[in-house]
Length: 178
Image (cartoon, rainbow, N blue to C red):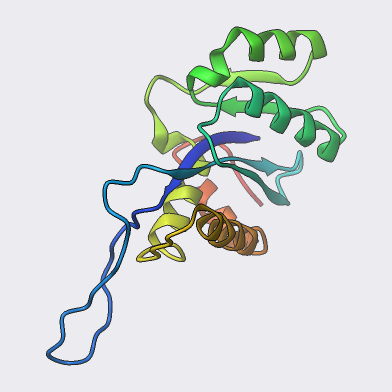
């Protein structure tokens, strides 16, 4: 299982847009605004490598050890089997509180990616796809509206195993899929 966090900003990633001929497209947004919806997600690969699942949670604050622990606990209940966790070196992952939680549980076995190696983590590709495709040019004026759009897009991603598989295949990891 691969774990990663990201954020969806109120100011959108601007891509190409459409407008009537001769009219400049206008995209309204709030300026000088740094609010965001933080997200934590896991891409889970079955032991036989024939099934993929994408799990996520959204938070109105930055991801800290408390959110990581809650997510891991819910994920463990959902999976109901031993699992291996591959994640980056985010401070919340290395926090004493997170380490103590994992040691007390005796699960899962964890491995860190090398320092700053986002290209190895397939969840980074999921975040990139969400930000550059369904959420591109999406300007929301309320945090709840942004969260709803991000939730809708991530849920849609859950229903596309071929797309999830492409994120794994794009990563230079040695993981082979069926």
